[in-house]
Image (spheres, rainbow, N blue to C red):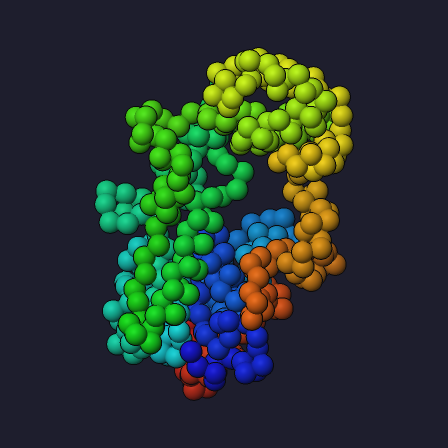
Length: 402
């Protein structure tokens, strides 16, 4: 990693300070990965199509009185933007110059697109043997390799949708785009791993698949399926192997209950003022409670309906029982835990505060977070390309010469 790419790197306490990342991604999986790298201190240069940019620049709503969309702002904080048409000879040549002095490249184009432009790993490695080249795709080699890999498609194929939804309802897409986020997390992990081993192993070609990655996230669901030969059941908020482990409706909202041991069950009975339930033979053990799940639910539902979610939250904490109100996405940003844990940004766009969570993990000897707002399209083109191109070459790129 070279200090010349990041002014002030000597005083930057973030772990990736001095690293330059070329970000040839759009939508969610790639931008999420590179935003994590930016939060860790990397100088992330987002390479975007002239006049169009990342697709999400046009996916509303916009934030306040700005022309920045909420989607774009949520995954592109802390980056710089360069307009560059990689499909032209001038654009590709300019990009090669940038890659020669970069540490990392992340791209999520259709497989083979970068190589078609002469910008594949083998092409760029000739000018930079230490380059860490990370491609995010839908699938590894196989029959689905060229399938359009939107999050919904990957979720459908990877099993997550089949496990989500009510027991008597259709499969549902999880509320979070887990296929995209999964790939972005793996990409960031792979990049920092490759950078950590670069002195010993040199540059790396990394392929991060959404599908295979999301299947890996099945974890216990996969274990149960392979052990029983049966599909993991769709049960809404309930758990096939634990009870009570589900959401209950309270007087003013929903409350999630997670009982995973006999001691916790005893404490729950005290918290709901029903110590007699602990002595009921139908509910003596977890296996008994799973077997008599419907009867247990019938006992608990009217109890939870009698108090507010916050009252139950207080009682559960008092008795040491895992449980919490189900917050919506407005309430979570008002939660005192999030406000006091110092992980949110001070970002303000168009008169609207955006306390988005920055890198949430904490290090004893590093700082994290990015103090740069999401970039305007092409705002840094001259500064970035001016370091590697002559004035005439920069004009050729600007004019879109092929």
